[in-house]
Length: 115
Length: 112
Image (cartoon, rainbow over all chains, first blue to last red; front, side):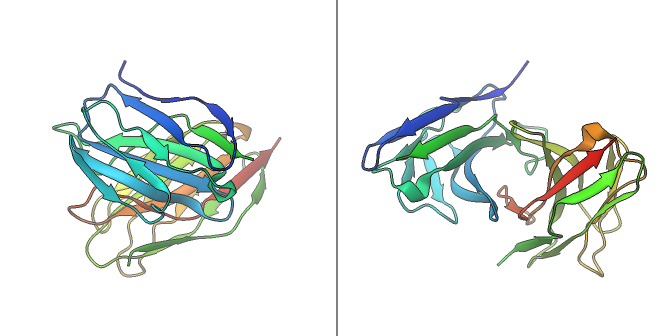
């Protein structure tokens, strides 16, 4: 079965360190997204990609970067982790040919703690 | 810009009670509307969707009708179960775009 996976599921790091969160999907979807979930804010879009070599900034992109070198993966990098980036991060994908381009499928999430 | 407003939670109900979670939206075009559900410790799952005015989305006993005149997409279920306890998110996607705008989520707690 097709799926979307995230790793690690839990991560503790220190302020100032670079952190990369992995996202891998086997849906063959064109579109991939990164969100953060915080109490009182719901889900907020960090970055997204409509295809290989395409990346776009979302609502809360400061301090984060992404790159898309293949269809399956969209890693999220925190260049210099800050305590304000403690959150749960979700990856999602959408857009397989023939399906609704707006229906997103979500990974299980990564809980990141920055000390 | 686009926005989604949901009722604040938590919503606390007894099993077999009727559920309504209100959702209203602001969008520039003709958006598609969605309800996602998040069970404890998991990612979000699509519950139902509607892509044009007066469409009714339905799944697992849940329903929501796209009301363009009131810019609303309220979620309803006639008889909730303990297993429905989760966080529910209303979301929209503007026509021609793949990004979603989410509401803040509403936690539902159902007791036996």
